[in-house]
Image (cartoon, rainbow, N blue to C red; front, top):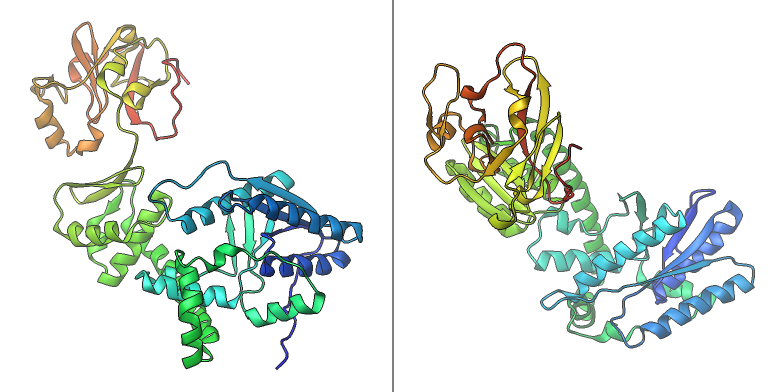
Length: 451
């Protein structure tokens, strides 16, 4: 049986890159891209990532560079560009996962450097079927079983896999027809890697028993992609119901069916964590959130906090050690005063009433809670301990951090509660309001001048 040549369509007049390792599949894709690009005025780049994991990495780099140079000498212009990884996987890292993550980061950097918006990847049908099986054996959900998308957009770059429906035999026939030379990666025979074990030990037996396994499993991945798209659409609708300015509302969440609870919770976590939550974290939350109360769960980059029916994500970092916290602050005008030692910012705004005299803020003391502090929540109301005031105002524990502000030994401001009523300004005085906001992990460590 003869194999049809794999199809390839390119957008006219764009810059297009191929992720080019020098192996069979990427060599064939680069050759086909170059051939399709010529009549369309498309400029083709070959992006090669030097991982530094193999002793042959330098030789592979040289071979890829020379191949592109040979094509260019024949008038088949291909611009070669490379990125060498400076990092190495850490102890305990999955080398496969590390290499994949670093490779995509390097390709994205190359795209930005060369003004490329479309990168073509050479994965084909067998790669998709293998991904489905590997994800299934890891106990993945629908998003994992969906495998690799045909087209994805991330960080301003479009990633496309034009040959995802092409069989390995079709690509091999293309290579033979055009007499293409390519690199044989010796690591493909290393059974320490899960994909290699699957390809070398499992696939031969699977195909012998079920000849259509590759096509059938790849088709299952396509169905999983459709199902995942439906789940994401439903999760978007449910997110509108369970999300508020306060956070993730448990009452609305508990009104959903169990499958929808799981889906929308994972979607909300992904929004706040910047990546999919681990299966262990999602399962723990699904089990424990239904009991309500107050609780805290560690998570990447911070923690999740539950208080009075609302779940919020609190980003890191935690406040600096006490000895490195700012002890004094001079506020002489409105603005934003950054206090990196306390991991937050004091926002000062002018107001006509209900504020504190600006003149009283010229020499402020910044203190941590030590117990025994008294706070008056309103004019004519008795002073009470901070603990009782926090409870009465339903201020969650993670909103209570930050410095207590004192002027002349008198408590002026408490994060989460506001201004002490005993310090409010009289009519006619220049006055301001104060608000404490926790900085994100990326906030700069600027000085105490207004932003």
